[in-house]
Length: 195
Image 1 (cartoon, one colour):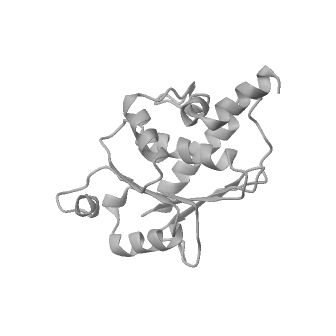
Image 2 (cartoon, rainbow, N blue to C red):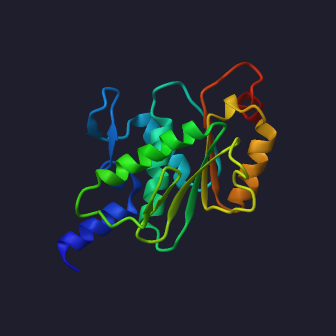
Image 3 (cartoon, rainbow, N blue to C red):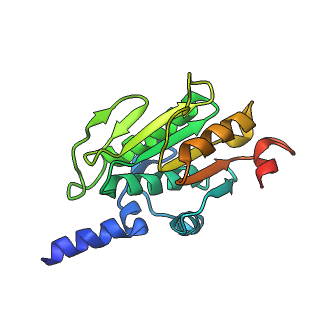
């Protein structure tokens, strides 16, 4: 195996090395490299343990971005057609997260780029069959009768029917990994009751 292939394998195996090659839109709309900060590296390390995770986040630390980057890495390098589900109380919220995934893909370095199988407003499917799928509490059916390997439940504190949304998420992720992340809404909100 030559040195270039060894380097590529090393990048694909290490989430921080892979993620630090992704690009995001900054607050001004410019495309910039994603260099994980200390809080984001802690989130990656927690995700690597494979357990479900609850992230009570302050605004603007990039927790949604880093969870999306981690799930992008998992899906993109997978050797089987896994599914990552994005779930929130509003479809606009998950479509925003899907656009983060699309920014990752659109700006991949050439040596990592593989063709897409599908690209729509609610779905992204990679070369390996791995799929990123959007759903919301207001979507007809949401994730009912559906299973996924990874699930990001975003802005959980703002859900009008948190119990139903969480039940849908738990049944969809089955034996996979679920991340619940949200800013706080009020004392006693669904996120507060989870923590």
